[in-house]
Length: 136
Image 1: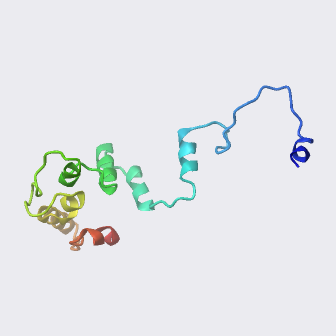
Image 2: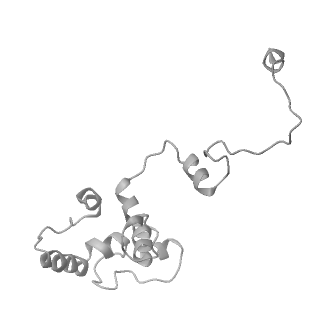
Image 3: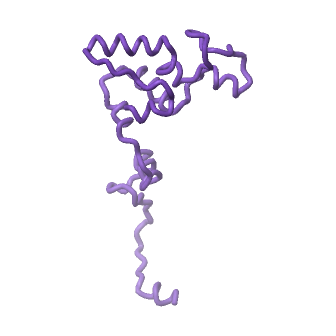
C-alpha cells in the first residue's frame, strides 16, 4: 500500500527547500502563522476597529486592555495579594473593576452624561456590567 504511493514519486537532485504552505509567497511570517493559528475561530469585529481608529496608540492600547479586562485595577491587585484599597478611589462605594471605573462609577456616569449631552445625546450606558457590552 505504501509502495503504491511511493513508486511514482520522483526525487530530484535539487536542494531541498523549506516552503511555508500557509502563505502564497511560501515564506513564513508571524502574521501568516497567527492567521493560520486562529483560522476558523470567531472574531468580534467591532474591536478590530479599535486598532484602525485615529486615536493615539496609548488610547488604543488602554481600550484594548480594558476590553480584555487586563488593567491593573484593585480587583486584580487583590487577586495577586498586592496591597490595595477596598473601594473605588473616586466614589468609595464599590470594588474597583475596569467596568466600574469606565461605566458603573457615579463619576464615570456623570462624565458620560456630560459628554453625550454635548453632542445632543441623552442615552447613558446601562447601570450593570452585564448589559454594558450588549448596549454597545
